[in-house]
Image (cartoon, rainbow, N blue to C red; front, top):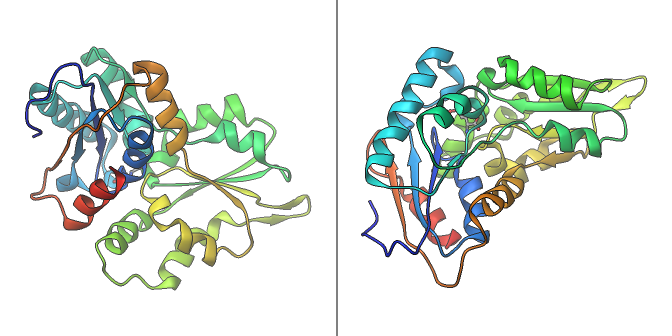
Length: 260
Ligand code: DGL
């Protein structure tokens, strides 16, 4: 937990199942370096993409509630599509502060595509959600949207960030179903709808069968945080990390330090 900070500093809790939320932390921190941060990772239950919906809702409410008892956040950022597409209503009913979710960036993808072929690369949980289907219905009706539920990519991103060897073919196999060729053209936009995936962006771009626009929602989430709690002031806030399975991995601490 961070040392008690003057209450004129705002506090932001960033939550994910593991290391993927770091991609959002960096973007939020870039706009609000003056805030105090707690990065909370429920790695004891990683991957969230494999959890049953009821279990996921109960788990997220419990871990966020326990963290907020100690870290009185002014804003909570759910840096996880798999959780956000399910638990935002329950979280907003349970806690009073603004809660910013991360959900598949289908609206920007629809604005960006030229061929009309969009792929949404996400966890099996996120692609199965009604919320995701509603986003497609509301913002991408008439477009050809392919949902790709990757079983292994979040785990591969964790492994790579921890410095373990991850072979190119393992990544290539997970992204391959995103690339569709039809008479009207080829996929030209891929939504990265899991916060882990931008950790592998350089490799994903290199392994893509053809160039496409990959959408990482992190900058938009950071702007939303500023809209809700303001632009902040001068100075540098503190940060702390809590990983439910044990100590924060060194790669996470290095990422926090680099992001500050
Ligand atoms: N980072 C999470 C997301 O954005 C998911 C990873 C997991 O399956 O736990 O969906």
